Image 1 (cartoon, helix red, strand yellow):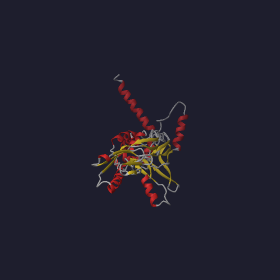
Image 2: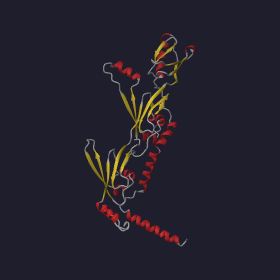
Image 3: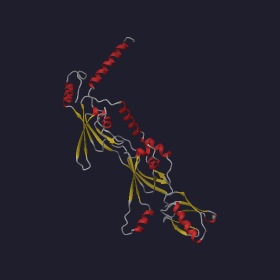
Image 4: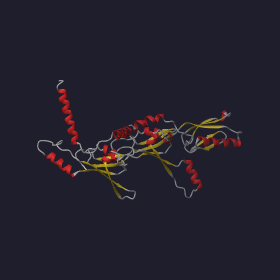
Length: 357
């Protein structure tokens, strides 16, 4: 058995040499580039786990601007006036009824704004320097839509204040199912005007009033990767949380797995080629063409060499959505490959070594 070990080692070395000779045209990644790609893949794979984990840990933002609405239960306390203290539910018209001051419209107002209003009402005719505290004891059921590249899109009921991460966690987290069903790097929070903003707009210009909305764009890399707590927005009733799908680029030609790759996390040319299985060691050359549409919709073509990109003699081109990457195939190599396949008795791989341009 001991005598066979040197022979087996020699055979392994020979097989390795043959394999290296067959793959002479394949470009080898530098160690730091391999590590960077592995880290990028790990980051994409762990986005959902980060999302669900951080949803419970992130500190809640300030909810002092919460807008009261029908079905909310409010606690109203007036210091030193126990007989006037009440727990009242907001009715369908957005009103509450309190002793002395009667019916008060509170829909669309924050608890702080309601306090100011009650101080005015009680202080004008009934009490001297009243100290009023208003808090929300029970929040009404509110609906928020979560759409796009999440695991369970749909409408979600929320009671009380919730954050962006919490709502995305309720929707099952980000999608990461193949190259055509990956979440992008941003989240859109589409928000319509509040009741108080609408009332103010109608009051200022009733003839030209048009309901407006705004879209808040949140960078997921900053929120999840860098822990930017200020991006964990407070979600309001009626918000639409939309997670766009990642755009695709297309890698064709001399790669092992031609097809589309998701453009996210600043995808570069070398990363896209790696995601497509790497260059074909038999057919591919070093030349790569990148076809793209400019801002005016006109096609442009860029050319790069993979060996120079990997050796950092050329910049690694960042890809954009709908780019088409074509790894060129050598006609000579292709002819030799066909000839090899047609040869009776097996392969001639290893008998020659491709030296591509």
